[in-house]
Length: 160
Image (cartoon, rainbow, N blue to C red; front, side, top):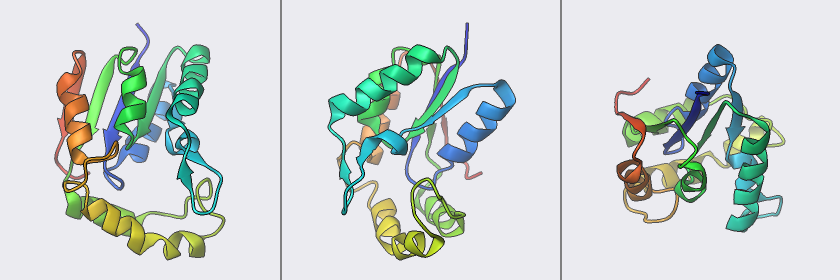
């Protein structure tokens, strides 16, 4: 059976790093949910859930083996029944903050390093509030997704 790995966790938890490692090492197609969760507006707004789910469906229809990663439990749930493994990266808020501060420029998300840096304090506040929120990207949403997943799963609490 082809590997289909779903990775969830807070921003800065190591999702993209793990996904890239798995994609390169195991020949998996890689989908970062950030690439389809947002409309290209200022300020950015979430794409309607059904549009994002349809985009995920198009991705999984053309790739038998994949790794999908993101902080969006609502989008992850849409492909949970297809995943062969769920990885919940939960290294703690301080590890996530350190990773966000050390993050290289992400040209697929920001037009410049300066634009990314201007957003850093907002991102760090959002990361720190992970346990206090109850949205689709919160610790509680990730926990519910993890607890409900009936396949192979692992929670990683040790910072990479």
